[in-house]
Length: 486
Image (cartoon, rainbow, N blue to C red; front, side):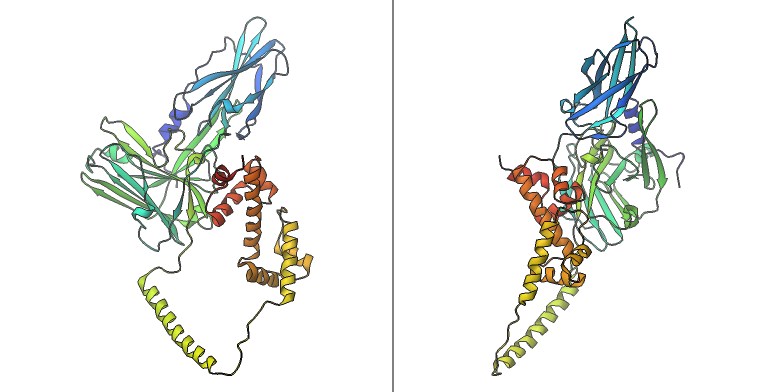
């Protein structure tokens, strides 16, 4: 259900961001002679160069000057730079996007200033341009499994960088039903009977990048929740939009949620928030990896509201999924409580006792204990399977059914053979082989991660990153930075 009257705390930030004026010359006469044709709407520019072009609808235009308005790293003040002057058709140029830093949330704005022989000037703009070529390292944290309550402790606490006299930490944990986020804020100046407006606008913002797509702006796949100090939590939905005249906007609307949450306030000490997000909110189940950020909205001693982010950055960066840290779901442990451990130890002791009697009995028998060895035929089949998988490794559609047809062995038999010799299932063994090739190429070549993922048969670079973390507990970017041959 949509709340018509309630606005997200960042709604006003978004309005402020998108209506920031760009400092640029104003056209002396609007002739509608220019129109941007490149770059395309909504394209994230990950390459170091980009073609920008305008279509000229009037013959009077003699030259066009291109410029860009962007936000320097960590700044919320726009800066404008000239890109070049084209004095004859076609009015297009190659823009070296490496000259400006990555652009988050609102993106950069391109300007084209056309001048006629009479000196008349027309300026057109194209908003929401996202150069995103500079790589940066992400922190990644494991989300532990816990049946109930909040799995909180020094080993999995994520601290905020807070003002003096204040401190705060966040915790995540998951189970089959939900993902739980807990935030504890310690503030000696906190007073629960502050004004209603203060309590309504202060609280905790929780954000997830479902699909781990690392876009520079939030969209309908971004989960965003706000838990105010006073009032019920709600969800904010984002929808990026481009208009026909090149304007870029992100519209938002809020909706109520009935998720389980707890809010505990302590006078002159602070407060604790815990929000349980059901697995259905993420799709069929909680994904293995998530981008995530948590933002505290607090009012400082000067009365101004501050946004303190778990992932530090400017106001644009902290709301950009590409800037968030990565969370990895820790597998569910087999042992969860002391009673289960006691039962297992008891059974192990009982089994060892019977095993001792069995060994004693066998030693008394005048017979040899035969050792089981893998048959020569099975070894030959495994070598054949390994050879076929190696030859077809870069085939993205490679499946166990296809290998079964090639070697004339049943699917179940293939799985059994590979499991016996490697300890992996067919799909796990296939991904491990691909990661091995990717490691060598990351170490010895300067190809992009996306290109290496393509060459090694991965669906995309996110799949390669997922299995890198699974098998080697590091990301491709970290591995390359530490192991690449100079």
